[in-house]
Length: 139
Image (tube, rainbow, N blue to C red; front, side, top):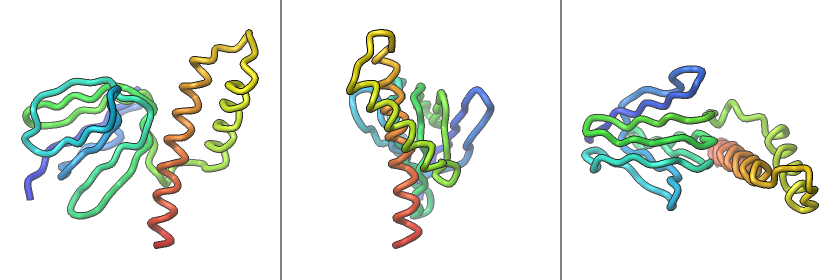
């Protein structure tokens, strides 16, 4: 089975670097799948789950935004933040979701609703990744 190199980098350093079979991420215009020999591409990433397929296994990470570049020999993700499913504190993610939803519901004039919308998207991505991990453990 053919592979491509995936590197995920944040300000803290390299989060992931390995050969994989497929990468699925959320670009600005929707979800995109990257397979070996994909055409070169560069896009912004929106907060969401990033799926890595390797040797018939699926791994999910929560990405809070950034950039994705597809080169002939590899895929590079420059992420604002990235968390593996097992690193996500579900209570903290749920609390962040509730705070963002409350701000958006009440829309106080002193609060930046764009920031609240971004916080909501990030918390929902984290919750989604954590739930997928939990379902796999139960299944």
